[in-house]
Structures are given as structure tokens and as C-alpha cells.
Length: 178
Image (cartoon, rainbow, N blue to C red; front, side, top):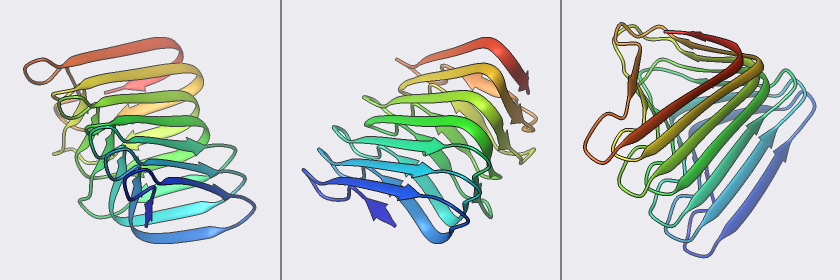
């Protein structure tokens, strides 16, 4: 689904309880000037079969909040990208976010991506895919409290990958395995 798809559009989605979402793709803030926010709480389960993009276009913004015991799984060889060309944030205070495809925080020129991980586990589960923090854009990975970041890729984390990129990792509690 596309949430905040067209220029000037603003979308807010709150998913609670034991809800189940099965989406081909999840785009939050798809086009220039659009904004999308999604909050997943309690024991909600979200499966994305294509891609998860937060702030895809220049001038867009997107926020994904994952709390309590909520889960997000991007299946197959699909991507998770936070702040592709816009300003994207993933706030995870519990639950699990996982995928086996290529992942990037702060992807392209103008892209600003932030992953705030204060609880739960974020996993990049493929050994042959990259995990970028700042890939042509500005990426920040903040790990604190009980947050666990796991990158099983044989390349580990790639920081500031590309010209004019910036990549920052702040570890203040929690754990990082790469």
C-alpha cells in the first residue's frame, strides 16, 4: 500500500491489537511533498512481499513506528530503504523488523534516513546483501536501551558508501552484531 502517495497528501495509519497486514509493498511518503506515518503496536503482524520504502521522493517524509511486540517482515529478496530521497525515520521500541534484501538508511542525494532502535530486534538476514548507513545520502543508526541490531551480511555495515554520503552509528546501550 501507498500511504501519502500524491503531492500534498498526508496519511496516518494506526494498527493495534492482533491485526494482520499483508501488503505487496509499503510506501510511506511516496511522492514529492507527501507525508505518511504508520504506527504498529501490540502484537500486530505485518508482511510485505515487495518492498518497504520510507520517504521515497525528494521533499517527501515518512515515519514508521514499531512498538510492543509488533512484527514487520519483508519477504523474499526485497528491500528496506529509509530516507531514499526524502526524510524517513523508523522508530523501533519493541518487536521485530526483518528482511533478507538489500537495506539502506539515507540512500540518495537529499535522502535523510534515521533508524532509532531502542527495543526489539532489527535484522538484515541475508549473508549476500548489503546494509548501508549513508548510501549517497545521510544515514544515522541510533541503538540504545535494549535495541538489538543484527546484520548477517558478509559485508557487515557499509558506512558513508558513495560520494557526498554520510553515515553515523551511535551505540548507547543495546547491541550491534555485524
